[in-house]
Length: 179
Image (cartoon, rainbow, N blue to C red; front, side, top):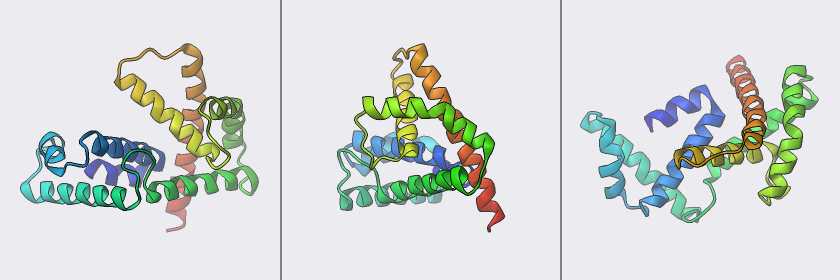
């Protein structure tokens, strides 16, 4: 919860990736709040009031995941909405924003996005930003498992990372301007 709050303020893409990991942690602990409390929440070394707040946050996520029927796969609607916010801003930058730096990052990533979309069997329902985030999350999971990643894959992922980094920085600046 503490990390999520910070990431949501500073970098929406990192927040989404972090929350996907939280969803997977909840699934790994089979939606058992006592196991999550013992293995995750208590590790934060926070005062009791903060630990209770974190526990409530996990309980709310568990409830949302059950209500939205994403116990086995999928993501919470709020995270899908965040992806769509980034995608809408992405489209804005490419069309109305006329941002040449961002457009350059997108053009460098586009071939890799298309290739990853095909390999992952993503549909047109999965926008370019979701495809990039899915790839970045996949690489994160492979690294955590200590699996080897090919140079070509790392090269492709770098284009996604640069594009998403540029997008989220511009999104944050845009949001701050319009507060």
